[in-house]
Length: 250
Image 1 (cartoon, one colour):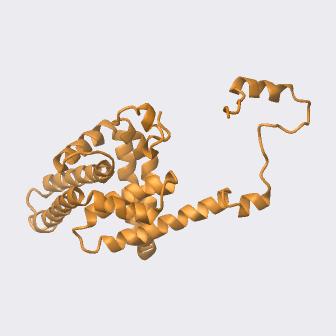
Image 2 (cartoon, one colour; image 1 turned 90 degrees about the horizontal axis):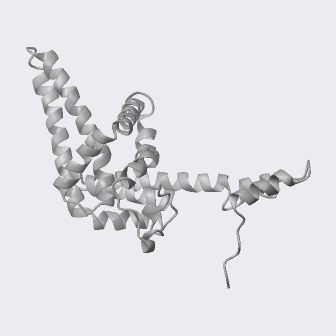
Image 3 (tube, one colour; image 1 turned 90 degrees about the vertical axis):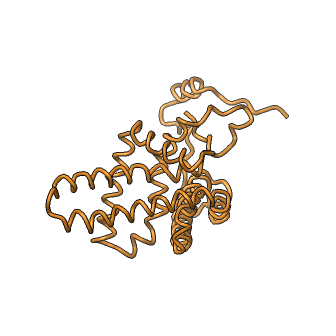
């Protein structure tokens, strides 16, 4: 059977312009309240389903981070599962999470261990050097803030890069550093959001924020992150356009 003919945008606009006054627009289907609230493909059910998936992924992520060495693989897997399953509707969230965790385990574990060791070093520097030695404190305090900002900027891109590209650990760090500078506005927005979330966690709703933060952060971050990552991906070939990470290609 041949494909069903579709009206062009110009033809649709002409039909709407020529219809009698008061006649309903044939190009727009009104959704009843019942359909909005209870239809499985309606906005309410879709919203609740995605919210539940994000909460479940967040809980699984926190449990998988307990051994510490799995921090990198779990973070990489969380980005993969949120974008592919929750946003794109491909596969099942938990299945995609553990698939990505197994697939990227080695490189992500090394990258995550390096990152955590670096963060521990920054914490030691803050506690033992800046606060104990009062001489040159202003200079060291400024240097420490710069290091924290650079560390945060790299961390924003590191694990999404590992989930999407076939690169070495060093290549992932180098790519994250370069992208953080090339997409400065996106990096700045992420850092500002991270500061706000840390404040929310420390002073407002610690437990609730910890439970819902990881997956929701990744979901919101991916709205900007996917545009950035796609700018470094090759244009899809004809047989690759159906792959989930090319959806919304611009």
